[in-house]
Image 1 (cartoon, rainbow, N blue to C red):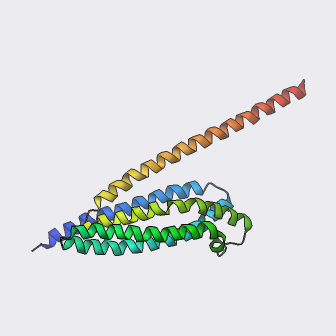
Image 2: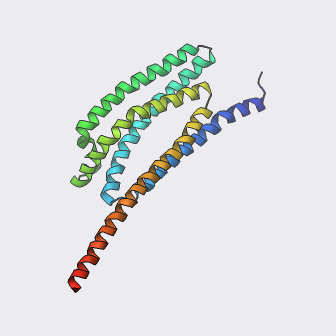
Image 3: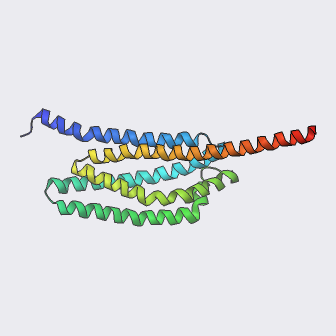
Length: 206
């Protein structure tokens, strides 16, 4: 029989990495939000509209993954390890089929769904372009969600925590590289116009 201390220790070993994983995931989203916050008002509105739809779909993916976590945990507890793999594979396959349908519908009929949130033609045009780009990440979101559910079903939450610990610095590095390239471009353009302006002033004085 397990004592209360052992049970509490096991619970903490499972839930603490899960909590930290969610915090890191939110932190990564905060970095993306910080970048979007520096765009124009229409760009922010377009991104916000698309996020409403993608977040709704993410809740669907997460709900299916939670169900898979329960089934995997039951199979793992009963010693049926092969069934754990089958459950994870079946979940990924089923969600991939559904995701493909979502991708096709949102790619060709994006204005139909985006029109519920705004009637501004410029915002809808920007949102449609953003949606047609972001839908290609859906399969990777599904794979990550199901893999996370599988590890949680095994009771191994440290592995996904390590994955998110590695993910956050990589996102920041890519953002820094992108900002560096943009700043260099803007600096070059600024210097070009400044040199031309001085040249015109010199020619006018002559």
